[in-house]
Length: 160
Image (cartoon, rainbow, N blue to C red; front, side):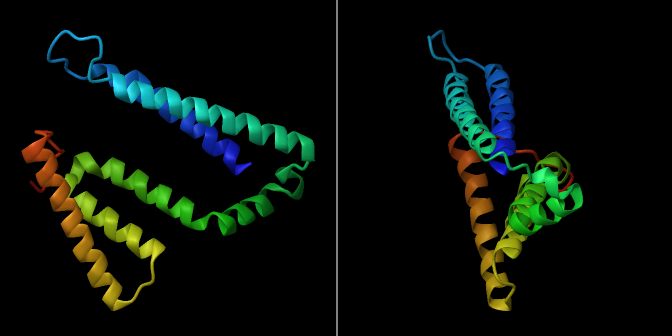
């Protein structure tokens, strides 16, 4: 059942990517514009996600076992127990995306990497120092590369 939900979400994500990738500024008249590659990736993602949804729907129909037979409450508890890390990471990712424009790329990326490391890894003092160091190196390295080499601007937010 979870694979079907993920497949549908991936199809929706690919539709968003496909329709928003035509907004890139074109430098010269060519057959391929800057949005061609994201559109191709979105089409491949939608195709593969469709295969996943169809395959898992057929499997679910063959077994004829509905997860809702046990009740919504038990289903929710089982879903939480089985997919706790995935749900927490998705919530963290959603917060990261929402806060990206508000507090800026640097602060939100550092916070996201630290939060994700704490959710996934052990919470020892040594690991916290390592996670913090990695978050700083990755964030500032990406920021420098995209700003200086590719000339891509990141959201500044209220702190920068």
